[in-house]
Length: 348
Image (cartoon, rainbow, N blue to C red):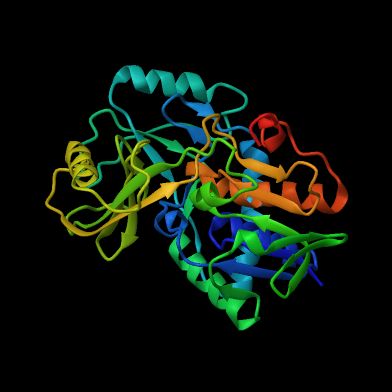
């Protein structure tokens, strides 16, 4: 009998799969490749909400778990996926500079917001008011992570590429049965696909569509991530990832002309050099209205669990949320109320 049957191999599925394997548990992952938000994600991790200059909840703890998690994965997969890169907030005014320095004096933000005004001129970008540097930042190459981790799962016979049929899931005394697979627990990590799940479809997952551009800009000289009306992430070879849009109505992963136009207009506000659009990507982020993940166990069904709703901070949240769920299942360590699906008890 397996320890865990895991449905989904995006950031949530990978995070739980690896947490289980690192703790000596047996797994099998099922995925039909229908969800692509993790593949096209910006992959940035940033402990500060830059719109308000406030700390992301439990940022220090989540960063610690994330750093250790991806360091182990890089050694395991023999690939560089975690790229430590400064994020520079491009200031719009002297007032925004002042707000930044006021925030940097706060005890919970002092380790994340540099007190040095960055005045370096990057070719191709206008920055009359300079930049503020966010510390302990970077990005994970999510497309590379998903490819190499899937290859690892396949090589070790931990992966089946198929759609999950909910009608074939049966609960048994010591776990679950799915077709000829027996497991102690099943973890649903389906992203926006959760809406088809009869166990958890009542949870308020409100997907947010995001669109990104990959541009080529030979005259843009940039070795940091710039946060402005959009983020600009250097990929090398004069390529840059530009994002992202937020659309709460459209739940498809089809790129739109509206999204492209919005991104082009915003990038032209920041850079003043020619660029060429190489690709246009879209996906639906699994977001929740209260901006908290969905973690926990289906009511009165001790073998059926969910890890979802990682939203725009999936890279930073995934490992910590997987650890919380794993310890809840294996050691009965209580989940924090902010992430526990029981906060929606009447809806789940």
